[in-house]
Image (cartoon, helix red, strand yellow):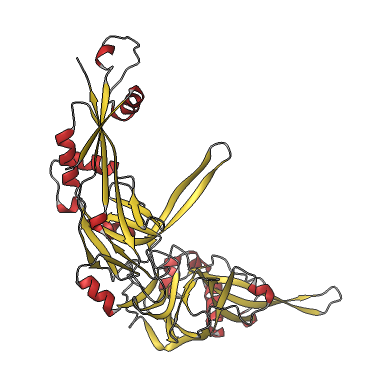
Length: 464
């Protein structure tokens, strides 16, 4: 064990009491002042070891509205495909004033894509087919979901060949930040939905009843092409219809309108059906025990954090008045060479293995006791978890520790952060959601032999 003791002056004493005092009062008596006019010993222990192993992560809960469509083969990574099943949230109110079912003109499925949100060749033609679901989707649902039996191949609603390029679009469209892939839906479906609303609008106010009785959702499958994965940011169904009115001179006039009947929202079930065949050379590294994380739906890394050794270090060095200052964990993570340059995920979740499924199922946020997150440092090539003090304090409260208390998993995640504040008080960043990372393929190799655990605690040294 490598220990360093540092003596600090009176200023550090104030910092010590800020974190270490267990009781105090408001009296100003100087009785006993002579016994505290000494120094503090700060101990830093950094000689701990960690080892890990890759573990398959082929069944993850997407917990996201992002939809990944397409297929891609990447040398040094593997073959990845993703399709979608999704329910829809119905609009609570539809325009029925002066509208008859014959005035419903068309319906389109609209997939919104931000420019640049794809991997692969932008102009490669890719094909999708849309099928109506005939069974309710399970909940929870996982990335290895097989839609067979949830739709009929004869119940195809529409199809489309698309690309991710703005070539051929007008200048006005090319300057937008996003474009839309549209798929024509059957006119009969649009009129069916309008009629259902006219007959019983209350069903549209209840998403579960609407899904159960009216429309269970769609399956969007890849039908053609290989070479691109496209990330869809929002999905909705839009209906086009018309109404009739009279002009001031008494002539008939047609007014064309549109309305968004359904949308993909957090309240309903949506899922990316992901298939990943890892490249042989990557598989060989994983089989040899290399700690490689591959996403989406590939491999996590499992490891045992040496909390027993940290506690032992503390117990052997602490005095009668001690305070734990910090516990940090930094792990190097480097890219693995591959055709498209897929690198480490922008964020990594460190979560107790026994709590991982619960974390995502409950849409939890890192609590710094059972789960932590870190942003990838592209300069230092590492993930640094800097707020593990609360975890150590929690472990110190336990009489005995089991493997469930210190067996963790690294898994890539998307982290959404909202900032608030003003000129006077500054800004505050708040994590609002943490979901499995499915935005793009990622791959990283962890070097636990170079990991650094830094544990710092303080002892008050009193001379009587």
